[in-house]
Amino acid sequence: MPEQILDELLGLAGLVPSGSRARIEGRDPVYPTRFRMIDFGAAAIAASALQAARLYEQRTGVAQEVVVRADAAGPAMRSFRYNDTVPPTPPGPSRIPSAFYETRDGRWLFLHRAFAHHFERELAVLGLRDGDDEDAIVRAIRARDAAELEAAVMAAGACAAVVRTKEEWAAHPQGSVVAGLPLFRITKIGESEPIPAGTGGRPLGGLRVLDLTRVLAGPTNARTLAEHGADVLRIVTPVHPDGGAMPRDTGHGKRSAVLDLRTGEGAGAMRRLVAGADVFSQGFRPGALAKLGFSPEEVAEVRPGIVSVAISAFGSDGPWSGMRGFDSIVEAHDGTAHEEGIGTGRPKLVPASPLDYTSGYLAAFLVQVALERRAREGGSYHIELSLAQTAHFLDGLGRVDAAAAAAAPAEIPAERLAELMTERDTPYGRLRYLRPVAELSVTPGEWTRPSVPLDHDRPEW
Image 1 (tube, rainbow, N blue to C red):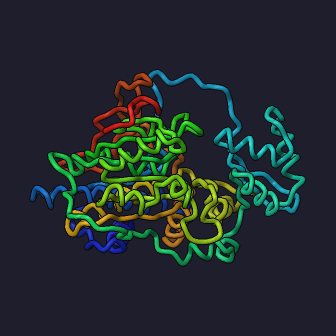
Image 2: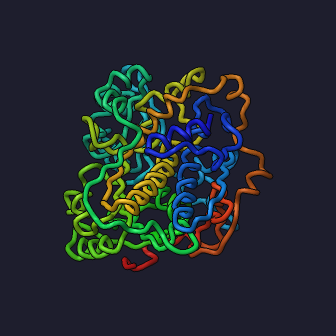
Image 3: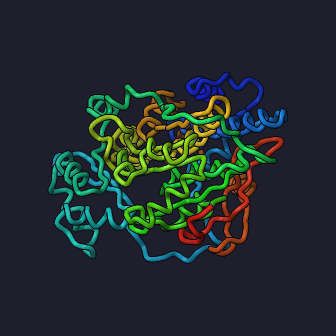
């Protein structure tokens, strides 16, 4: 099943089946869920690694094998959980996580509370203040109807989701749009002379990647490109920077700098970076960067031959194209959380972040597909994918046997997990984390730079 998914991904990108060049060992269930999230995730990891091997072979004539093991792909779908300093970082102030709440009309609402500025907006919608206890939040939500509260939170610039069934999402205006979209789109948006897809001893050696993303999906894309030798510079905003364990997880192999694109100085510095880049990856809501002068077409004018990537929650089509969203929000909207919670009395998220990580690995695969086209025929390319489209594809893969899913462990064996981990010195201290998952026989993946704090480097190549 995972290798069939791999061949389908290759076919959707216009490539030939993998044949004997890639092998995926093991399959779902890896964790106790019926969704084939590790089958899909392993296939996306294999696709990105296989395309890296393909680019290397085209340049050097040296072929290699790619192996992805399901019990390594499983932790990769939630790898931020395994990043920590050695010894472990002492816990900070406790924060109530995002959660499901019952509403007045007997529905469930998921409130995404991971970011302070979103939570402040949610409290304002609820008529509460920072410092009000959890019981006050429960009462305030229970006094409102789910759809009305979802709309109010969205309008306030935060994230909430009515927990829908699969049938309700299919009938929803955004759900019906997503169902009609392909898994991804690669569009040629400009002309250029052919440009080599890498140099030297690594598949993506010599290529420069700008990473204007946050949280998990977009940063995983750039981290994967760094794994295969690309020079990645992450650019973060000073307005709402990332924090916590996620940047440590997705920062391997990258430098990181802060730029405010709302200022003339920051926008000018970004244009200079774009002029020297091969890839421009961003995770802003559709249209947001265009307002600042960095639409795909404008980026391609500055740098003919660039590959731009846009990863969003719901895609660039439909009434929710401009809405904020995360893996958990999409799971609540599209029926995944409802199905996962059947038999428990309440909705439940799947035991990983498969939409985020799988979308990230897919994006890295597609970037390399576009780089191959650029090397062959020239041109600038724009790649679009979304968490909702990834979720729709996952839903279409069917389910694993219920008894087998129920018997799956919550975690892979400790001794196997230890084999997948490594350590290195970083500015955070000694950091323990998951190694790259894909095994390449000639150019094994590695991150030559450690994870660094967000403002560690200067915004320059």
